[in-house]
Length: 339
Ligand SMILES: [Zn+2]
Image (cartoon, rainbow, N blue to C red):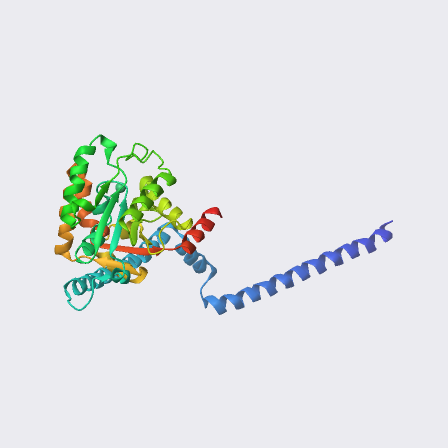
């Protein structure tokens, strides 16, 4: 029996020896390879120092310090860039508004359009949003400016006062009394919660355009500057007239550009963005803008504290930009809305 088990013991011993030898050789090879790579990438640094360096990098305090350092650097660059932008805008504004050769308006259609109708939703829209454009146009002797205000501003039951305020503001802007049309319709209340029917608004507009022989109709765009539903409703009505070809052939439709909230309160510092992004625009110097501010102050019932800030901070008190609305634009907008 002993003789028969001896060969098995020898075999098992040989297998164990072979395995230990192979594992040992493999371990030595791995260790050599590790050492070679460590020397290649980390030099003479020990594994302990490498681990310490790694822990230092990923440590929350270290990460926070690095983040603060990067953020403050980025913030510094941002501040410098903003200062340069503001300075350039200030220079452009000063040069354009003082220069006698450089034009502060870019309205090429002005020479061919003499009878211009502004369609607004509420008394005070003409100053708050269209002031620079109205002021610019009324300064031209051969330009006749009309205003169609579609509601009497009865949101706080102050329609009588607001009517007087509208008349007074328009006088400041240079619009004759006879050229003001104030609609007093129960189905067009000054109320953001009431949807104005497109057909009703379009009928008022079309009737005025045809009666007065209007050549350019200026109103809000799709966003209505402040996204007030009554403002947007006026654009949709004007767009529907364009879409159904009901506007007279010699009457063009123009929409006041709505801009984002940052640009909206950049005051004169939006001039660079406007020059780059808009085709038609006009700019008032400080004295001219004072006339618009004064017109806005005629809306005494609306002069809350934030409006006092608005007349100095809003870009719409100094700069207006508009774009011509044509059939292709409206069809494209409709396609985008559908998708
Ligand atoms: Zn309004």
